[in-house]
Structures are given as structure tokens and as C-alpha cells.
Length: 128
Figure 1 (cartoon, rainbow, N blue to C red):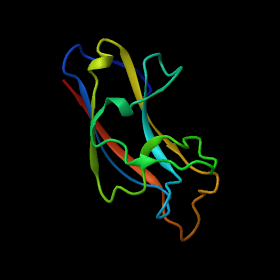
Figure 2: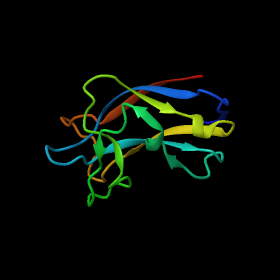
Figure 3: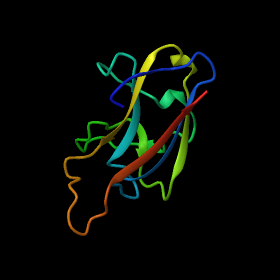
Figure 4: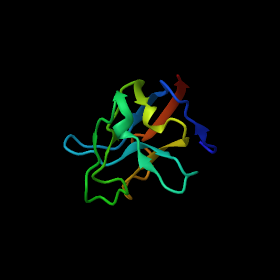
């Protein structure tokens, strides 16, 4: 989001419909994505995981591979179709908020011919 929106006083939630496919092996998730929010115009960001009430993060990004999101809970591996995540925004009521989907990759995750594509797509709806 390039502009903040003020969260309504009661009953607000964000519903996110998303699909993703990130680099992984059978034992480790190397790449992934997190949902973050800012209440100060983007000067700092907070992980939105604690706000998720349905369809939260699917794993943890492995450490030791240079990913800036290593050791964080995230959407990892593959979603195998669209899934939904719901966030309860009641703790942010009355505040100006913006959200971002942040994707972290290992330095070796360059997309090359014949490799699997690492991607994410989203659609969001906020309601009260």
C-alpha cells in the first residue's frame, strides 16, 4: 500500500486470498513471504502474524542461507492453489495502517531457465 488507511473502531478485519510457490527442499524452506504492517507511514514495520486468526503462516524460513527473513515464521513452500488468511484488526482500531507483503529470498535463488518460478499473488478485502 502506498497510503495508510484508518482502521474502523469495531469489528475490522482483513481477508487476504493468496497463492505462492517458494524454493524449498524436503527438509527446509529457503524462501518465503511475510505480511507486515506499519502504523507510522512506513518508517517501521511489524509482523502481522499475531493478528492472523485463520490461514496463518505455513512454516519457518531456514537459517544460514543469507535470506533476510531467516528464522521467521512465513508463508513457505507451495500453496498448491489459492488459500485465505484472515486478520483481526481490532488492536489497530483508530490508527492509520498500511500493509505490505515482503518476500525474502536466498542470494542463490536467481530464477534460471528450467527452474521453478518463485512467486506470490494476492487479493485483499477489508471489511467491518
